[in-house]
Amino acid sequence: MEELLIFIVTGEGENGPVSATCETAVAALQSARRLADEGARNLLIDADGQEYAPADFKRLFVEPGPVTT
Image (tube, rainbow, N blue to C red; front, side, top):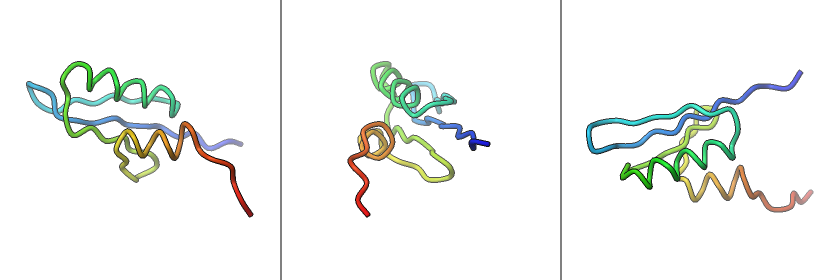
């Protein structure tokens, strides 16, 4: 059975904290971009208890490089 990950995007909007919950990494990155476009600052994406800036999250979860062994 595959483990379900939930991604939580958080930041600071003009009127206080903002957040979005997403079921996929791509959706989380899209939500972070949308919130940034709406003026949110200090955006972080939580993935399994670890927080990442959107650029790092994209690199690690959306466009990972080849795995070497």
